[in-house]
Length: 171
Picture 1 (cartoon, rainbow, N blue to C red):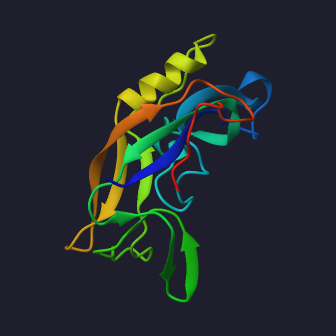
Picture 2 (picture 1 turned 180 degrees about the vertical axis):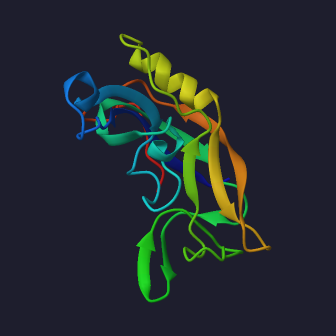
């Protein structure tokens, strides 16, 4: 069994105001959302920001996060791989390449992507995102990407700057 660790974190979300107007409509709105950290998936694929309501984006992950150990399906490996002559590092397919220009890259996200309610418990929001399903977007033989739900093996305690001492990282 091959495992891989991802980080699911709370991210600052922002909806840009309409700068052509005056008053409240010109102000940015801020919120928070739970989802897979940009450190755990390639940025050119589906991200948390793509899955939020229209107009909302993600600025950065804040300090509340959990490490999640997942089981990798057959044909998916971590490590270095090439697209053209560029070496990338991360999850990739050893069996197939997608015809979308990103070849064997495998993307990762949680099925649920939503804005948090003000004051919502961050640990519970992260757990909810994880329990919605950790999805791997894996290239198939047909050249398209297919959703594969990863099996979650372990979830760390909530942490900030440093992972909990009792967490053993894969790799």
